[in-house]
Length: 140
Image (tube, rainbow, N blue to C red; front, side, top):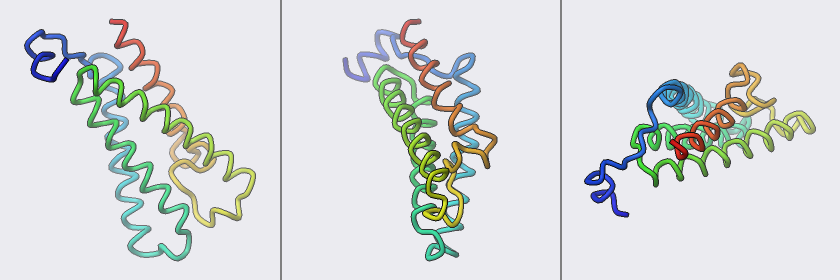
């Protein structure tokens, strides 16, 4: 079904109702935080911790894309957001574990370090909540 057909049928999945609105707000805040942090770190001290700062930039892109897809709505956007939330969760788990097992690899923290400890664990809770909401929104 094309986007035009979705609109015409009124079948565009609305993702920003109820908990979806909170997700958009949280992903938006995380986008701004991760983007500003990674731009500053890459511009001023990239040579100090290139892996950490690059991973923060990747997190920023993921957060921004998920925010966009949630606001956009529709079935394609819902599926894209679901895939991104799963990839985000995998990233948080891998990077979080990596920072605990080999802290010397990260002379400075990333957004996903220690499962998002520096961000009150929001980076590990957000994709779980997002996956739950996106799966629930399909059933609705």
